Amino acid sequence: MLFIIVIILWGFFGAITSGSFLSSRNISNLFRQMSITGILSIGMSFVIITSNIDLSVGSMLGLLGAISGILLRSDINAPLAIAITLIFGLIIGAINGFWCAYRKVPAFIVTLAGLLAYRGVVLYITKGQTLAIQDNHFNYIGNGNISPIAAWIILIISIIILILSNMNKLLHSRNKSEKKSLIMNLAFIIVISSIFVYWMNGYRGIPLPVIIMMIITVIASYISNNTVYGRIVYSIGGNSEACKYSGIDIKKYIFMVFTVNGVIAAVAGIINTARLASAVPSTGVNSELDAIAACVIGGISLSGGTGAVLGALLGSLIIASLNNGMSIIGLDSSWQNIIKGIVLLLAVWMDIATKNKSN
Image 1: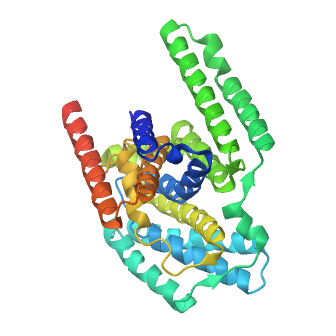
Image 2: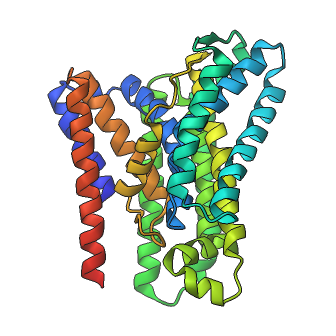
Image 3: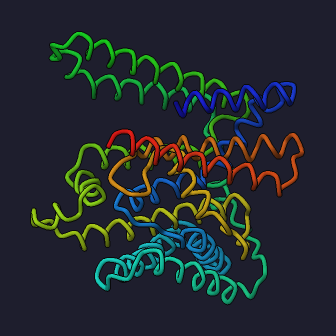
């Protein structure tokens, strides 16, 4: 369903802009812009699945991006600056997790306080000024591209890994319909991936931020679907009382979810600062709303327990497509916000209606 919505949006904006929206250059820029919201939505998805919320990720994005910029301007090399920024992200996420899990303060209040406090820290350490960054190696993270040849090689390796990882199911599945469905899904993924790489190679290759986003998506999807940690996260959101009586340490897992979310926000902050080649104090304002909207549009229920990381990513793509398309046709920013608000409201309404129908 989400994929169909993306196709409809792209078809509409492609037609209304005489094809300029669908150019390789614009699609490449769209995915580069989407990568920040996409990465934030991955961390946010785990938080929402546990029936919590994090309103501070936008301010964390700005703060951690500013920290990386200040470190680089202090003549610290890029790898060390990145490592320190990730550690700060872990610490900030752990602070949020500590108050939510072990002090039982509602996540809404904790992260709202973080939204205000972290933004204040950004303004204080930057003195409200934009800090230019001259480190070309660091800036390449946000502005670089994987060459077309490298993109095809990565795709071929990924396809081989995908087929091998599903080979056991294909060989031992006795259910013909299940086997047919699996083959069709694999074929669909391979075709779409090939089209994507071909499209991106039309303009400099795949943007590096998109590669980073995809790597995080694969890791997060594997964790959510194939690990004990992932199953417990879904269980906490679905029925926390049952988890409690099963002996699961709910506090520990909620603490871990917020901590990981802080690290993911640090990655997004690093990429954003590198893309802009500067640390901007206003960076990340309202980014938390886009991340939450992406999760909800992607089918992650605000009541917790249901949803998928890939859905959040598709939700991010829908939001990025709306932003990009409305900007190209010259729609006023006020109308852009109105339309995004309506889309979010409809997405939540559909989530509630679907849940009531299933009940």
